[in-house]
Length: 373
Ligand SMILES: Cc1cc2nc3c(=O)[nH]c(=O)nc-3n(C[C@H](O)[C@H](O)[C@H](O)COP(=O)(O)OP(=O)(O)OC[C@H]3O[C@@H](n4cnc5c(N)ncnc54)[C@H](O)[C@@H]3O)c2cc1C
Image (cartoon, rainbow, N blue to C red; front, side, top):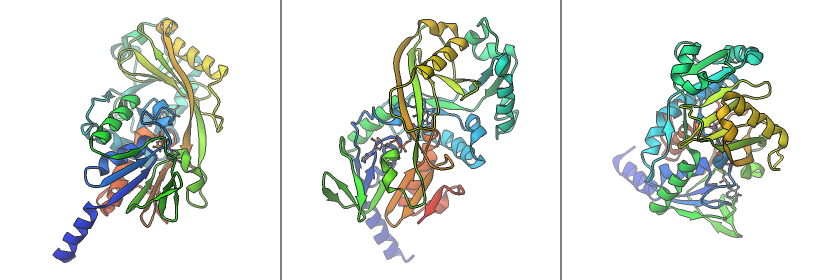
């Protein structure tokens, strides 16, 4: 490109006005990455605290290898790259966010040992590097309180590179950073896309780029031939001063893998059910019994735990449970993050920012992630 033309293009780019629909997880992170160069406007039907979003409910485990049992190898690679990118993203925030990469444990009692054998067989990482079978003595080093429980775990896997973060701290820190940067944020403001414009409260808004991050709220506007569905999840938040765990623990269970993710100051997220339903009712008794008995079976100290919250939400999912980025002219639609929003967000955002900047070819290419319409 001749020098004058390239300078003109640069100047045009620096004045881009970007409209983002949805200020859940992906919308906030997109705003973070774009607001240093462009004028960004966010629209969200929820309040800034995002209490209605699955992003607020999630356990925010960053577990590419554990999740690989049911995902493609590409998704695992995206998750592994995301784990490297998270610290750079968090370093841009005004407030600290709990982030940890101390691995995770997968445990099974005698009666569920077949599930763990099957789980280990389907892991896509390399044994010895991405996952290790450990004995009782190593478990005692990693999690002394678990090794001291009366009912021993018969099978144990350690996934040394996996991580987690505190999602609620992250959403709050993103909001305060974006507000400090002067991002325009229309809260309690549902929006939709019509005739290449954003419409909200019967008013049109024009942007140079529109980025749709509405999760399930975009159901009626995803590309033809795609089907977006909600997958119900129920999750508990506990305060358990009698329990200390150093990393997330998954317990093999016949219906779904249950996890206990320790956050700071003896707070724990216990979840999550995975039910093929868009039922938005409060959590059921059956799920309460299953989740609570599972965590009591892992550590008796949960008996005196305080139940802070028990809530349900819907994960936005496409047919193959993997995310897509659809690009058409100046519209980018991001959806289908399913149970992997936190796991994949840094890579998804990296790819979309590169699309806005016209630099997508500089990044790793993940088959099926980006679809040009
Ligand atoms: C129980 C549970 C546990 C989970 N645990 C994990 C986990 O451990 N690890 C992990 O990686 N992921 C986890 N997830 C998944 C993760 O939360 C989602 O993948 C992620 O939130 C999706 O991000 P998103 O930005 O695409 O959508 P969302 O977070 O749903 O954000 C969409 C936003 O769009 C807004 N919106 C909707 N409609 C409109 C409209 N018309 N106009 C304007 N705004 C609108 C909503 O208010 C919301 O703020 C879990 C999810 C659940 C439910």
